Length: 208
Image 1 (cartoon, rainbow, N blue to C red):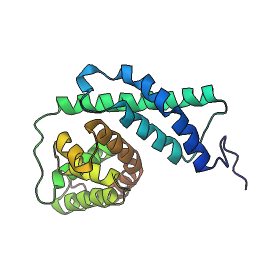
Image 2: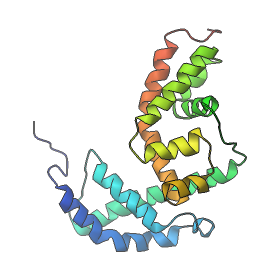
Image 3: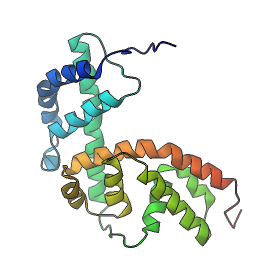
């Protein structure tokens, strides 16, 4: 069956060339919208780089015809990415007092499970064995992520390292790290929700 998506058959090299031609103008469009409080934490280049990755890896591969339409399409994605970065940095600033995890990091794994699969809250307190299993399921799901998404989540969300330290390890800006985490979260939600659905049918909750 022939792919009938709007950009079916657009070669990656052709799309990459179109993206490259828009890079300078897109960066210029993003720079004025970066809050002064975050200017040391990420750059417009970080946002544009993630925008290009998003476009190149989008399974739907929607690429509007006409350069003006294409630029508007890129600018919309870039601004959404900018909003993601700002929200993540602001949330991280409010959530100070993180303590680095040692050992298995079970609690941080379970916290991530509850954050990405809210239905897990309905399970109530889990027995010790079930807690270990749930934490391992989270770690397994994270381990299956592509690089560098996996490292961003492992370092920041599971090991609870400071964002500046994670950024230094990954060679990225703090804002870029949060963009990687958001992409990872989008990939993790489905398998973690499936896991919660499965264990909810096993009667692991002692209060059920």
